[in-house]
Image 1: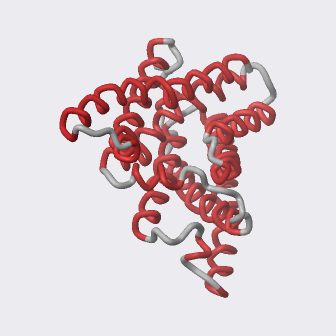
Image 2 (image 1 turned 120 degrees about the horizontal axis):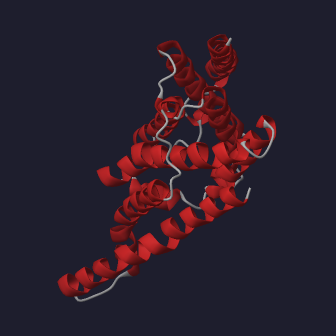
Length: 259
């Protein structure tokens, strides 16, 4: 548990304090030289994307230097093509189901909405959210934290603690519950396979779809804003059934592999 909490705190320190300060200094000088003024709103928009990218790179370097990134072949195994297909279906249907749940909890504040809008305004920010962020978070939360927890606790307890830390790590109230629920799927997948590849695939798919929908339908907060009435209920029912089927198939595939 100490390792898990330590890694979360280090990542928050780098992402929320160290990287922004390092990026803010040259950006502040640049704005003062070019504009002669220092507008806080402009400064925030200027540093947001590079600070996000810098924080991710710095944390990745730390994980590598500290020996938390495994070089074992199993860690980077794609498991199998059928498993990857099922994991992709699981995250897509799971994401839809979680979005439906959050539609019932739309009173929960989204304090990061403006920040996400800024990040999604440039390709660097989109890359940070959809690709680099998911890869880094899987290295951190599954490759390091879940791995450490599985060595100390039972699988169920380790998976739940890992998912809880993953949810709290997002800080934003509107993201904590979805991240916790999705984190259970990610941690369970890592536990069953010992591989980060399906976890990374699921995470990239989830974030990429979220970014796409946010850009294409900026007014929609949840899936019920895109589909309503009977079609929505039918799609939701189908998603839940497909999610259950995908998870059961993933379980069978990993069980069959170990027998």
